[in-house]
Image (cartoon, rainbow, N blue to C red):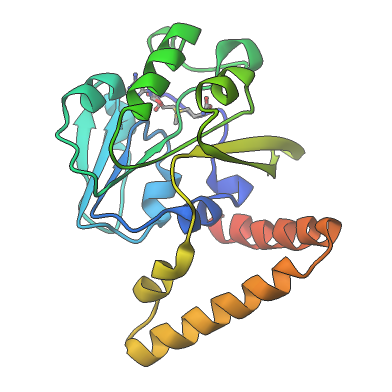
Length: 223
Ligand SMILES: C[S@@+](CC[C@H](N)C(=O)[O-])C[C@H]1O[C@@H](n2cnc3c(N)ncnc32)[C@H](O)[C@@H]1O
């Protein structure tokens, strides 16, 4: 079975990525891999996982129903009937020249594959988030998108993960899926806003310390 060179869960970044996602009816993960985000995410009405590698799809388990598509993400994006209510999360293999890949040859992405993928994603009418290592190619092709760099722990060293997204992050709706009833949802919303305000008031260095601790908690949770 193809094993991933790293997992998102071990870096504690999963819930951070999920928390940025806007409301959506259909969640689509185009390069499932270990599926760390899909597994931790509250389900959407429809959930679709795509991977070229059948072994990857077979070994993926989730608490809710996920439609598994064994095929090329590019082909799926070209043929799927997007309506605008989808959230596409895309974690493609890293660019070859800045990553030592353990993937078999047929799963390796060349620069032209990355360019094609980004052009396809840019044409979608819905929310899209891409994650990967920082690259100038992505910065150039996605210059109109928002982006964010995160320092994450990986194999006992710190590395940078970058997110590119075509929407304005607004996490208010997560209080709705976290709460048991209206009162509970309002309580969670107030708590989230109050923690947000405290975080916003911190000096930059302290923000990193706090964020890093939160990610450590998430990483331990994932073990
Ligand atoms: C999650 S991505 C890579 C994660 C990380 N960015 C890296 O490079 O280590 C790896 C997955 O993408 C899948 N994959 C590679 N090319 C693909 C394609 N064209 N369409 C769908 N899945 C693909 C592989 O089978 C693998 O499971």
